[in-house]
Amino acid sequence: MSRRGATAGRGVLLGLTLGVLVQLARSEYTLIKMLESRGYDRNLRPNFNGPPVEVSFSMTIASIDQISEVNMDYTITIFLRQYWQDQRLAFSGTNKSLSLDGRLADNLWVPDTFIPNAKESFLHKVTVDNRLIRLYPDGRIIYGLRITAKAECDMDLRKYPMDEQNCTLEFESYGYNFADMVYLWRRGKASISGLTTLKLQQFNVGSFNVHSSFARYETGDFPKIVFSFQIQRQAFYFILQTYIPSILLVVLSWVSFWINPDAVPARVALGITTVLTMTTLITGARQALPKISYIKAIDVYLVICFLFSFAALLEYAVVNFQSSRIAAAIKREKDREGLQEVKVDKAGKRWRSAGDSGCNPKEVEPLGNGGSNLPLTVCNQVNADKELGKVRLNSVNIDDCRERSEDDDLKKSTSIGDQLAVVVRRFSDVTRMVQVSTIDNFARFLFPAMFSIFNMVYFLYYCI
Image (tube, one colour):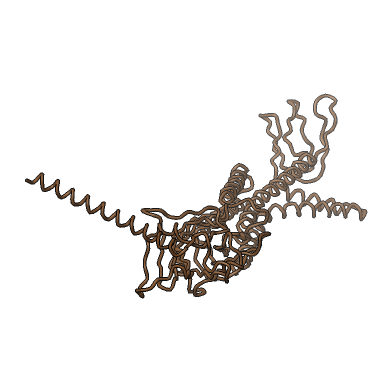
């Protein structure tokens, strides 16, 4: 008995289902026959050969995402509603509106609206076509659609990433011109809803506006409505990912100013590392942006940071060059004054000196058999070591010796030209020493001051 009862239940359920489907098919067939009996033609607009059809719009924004600077577009999902009146669909007997199946829209005349600035778009079809049709007794119709579109947005990236963009979404009639159809927003700005509640990843939604316009082609002027909205980019992400690392790299390049100039590997390695890292940072930042002809704000900042890092490397090149010049000058002075260690033979021949020390040229006895005299400037103390058979020249302070020697030269010089030459040589030596000793000290103050001024000017210009 249980099996027979279950079989009977399935039969009743199947019969009811088939009955409902048949009734729906008959209802659709009845509606189509009713439209045909009234002479309704879905291919002809309302008020055919009469005044243009007035189509009004309202829209609810479900989401805005995937805003791309590279492709200059954004993806938006909307609930679009169109309102118009078709006297051919008026009915009597009730004051209530009728909600019809969205699939019946294929049997009715609907506006040929499209999105001219959309790269691609589609109508949602899960679980059925997301369409709404509501019919009022006086022939008014509401036609609703759920659409997702990827629309163009012409962006001006000169202030990127502190920029504001104005994006639009346009609706236009494809085949009906102004003589056949008029587009307008139903309640002005109040026709837009859902925009203020949106949460975007890198942007804040600002003000918006709506207006009616027209599109002019060689085939005529066609009605168009425009929805425009502003978005402000949130720069905090770029501050963490780009600006702070750039600042730290520039500051790191200044560490070389406190490193001993003689530590060539340390200073060169630090300078090259900061320059290469800045190059990598610039390359990574540009990969997320389109290849545009004008300069962006982030390009200005990264290039200036790169120049500061490169300038720090060049500063050490200047320091090293000046140090080399001074070392060469000192070597020439040593060679000129003849500071060296001299040996004497076993016969006991040695330097003849008026005293144990001095800074005046002295003559020496011939070294070896028939050797010539060797004029030297003896700025030393002479210690004779009979056991080793040689004389050691213990150098004293070269600068003091040179200063005393130049003082003697200045006193002994009779002509003004000789005195001027001695003064110029002394001033040149002092200038070289001052340059090397102060370049790093000067850079320690100049580089941070200039970089701070640049940051103030940069952010004031691009953020205000």
